[in-house]
Image (cartoon, rainbow, N blue to C red; front, side, top):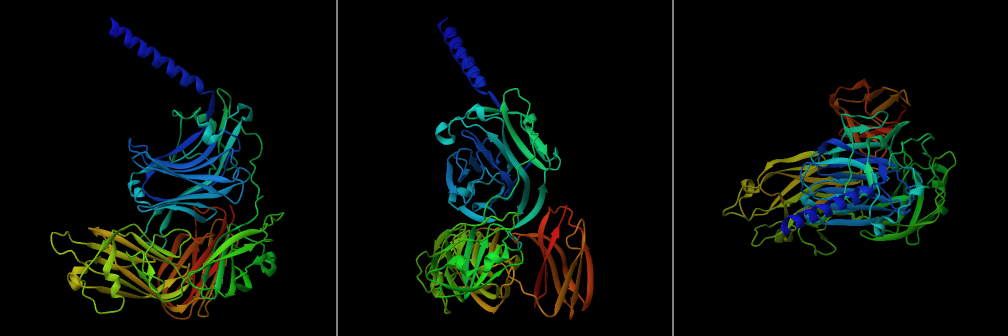
Length: 599
């Protein structure tokens, strides 16, 4: 009898506890998630977050297929008007959180946010620029497919989210569009466009509206609180039982001034990237730039109006320089003007660059190995240091073979645009009880080594150098990707030497050649446009379209064409409205032109 009474008491507590939890759900809000899960990739979204204490607006990925924790978050707290939070949760359920100060109030206007998720790092982007990267070893356990999700909720932690007041209701989180890019590291563009949703209609084959909640959320998610209006998705927060409506026009105006997001010096050129297109006259005024340690001149605005290129003197390779910028205007109908903003620019090392992979303490002449991130000139992705001894090698840079990086995924280096010779250094020291090491190597999307086995070329404990010429860089980034076929990848050193230069003209770093011509019409276009181009001789041709941030959208043609005039029609069905760039490239030259898509 006593045991029965105990069970009844426990059951009563459970019921009362459940009732208490249910009673707390006085509010309704919205959540959507994809039916399909993704494994790695890039997710971009244009959103305006809700401003109110006690609420958070999100974009995140989440493993919905099992109980193993995998989650990557962007969360914007409604009571903080200068911050976003970036978090990842691994199977140990330990979250690593980064609070990022923003250059704007995220609740006042739409901005573009992004998550890049790869096997070796997760990075978070704002307005087209990477501002935080986590490449800790724990990131490699984020290896389960995850759904893409957005929700708008009320955390039960006042310390974290602030106190919620129902007097603020109704509240709205706005989403303009979302894009997904597959992770394709073996291609020139590491992320390949897969799909876009402009929310003109609700795609119920892609998205599911949630009717659920979770314990730390003081609101229930209801399908009826997910609204579409004028091409925007809205997650609406209301009191329980109230109908979610949004009668007014969606507030979408450019009220934020532009701001600088990256600045790099390559040789005698300084290039500063901005958050949005700029008004040209304000960029020409040298008094808008304060550069105490550098002398700059000849500011030239790129063709997509987002980058200013200067001639510069006084820079020393490998140094950073404090500057300040003011007075730059955007292209809004009533231009927003940038106030005085301190800003650092970085000077890249000059050619040749010699990098000792696996050695973090090489010195100044030979660059030390480091992990790449948004503020570094160069670095690796993934890998574990492997010590070597007794390696036979009589050439230059023999010190490379004291150590290497095993299971390396990538190497990136910011360089001046132009053509390069790249040398990769390898040794295979494991000869007993060792599983074959076989891997491919790609440089800027081109496979340069296929089914590569070091021991098959030089045997064991002998240094090997593989040389690759005519490596063309047009976006100031040289990328090497290692793809395992069997066993672990490995690299011991790399040298990079420029063999020819390309002058900066536009954001993609391309110049108008003399032996090829191209015309785009109509411009603007809807829904199709034509590319007419002239070649002076038979040559391989690649025609590719990039978006305004320099990302590859589609390869229109890749093959050999005879001398003469050629024409093709392009029907970019999945393109959103905006500015795009068409690039025509031959082995000798490259040309880029701007085109505008109107919907």
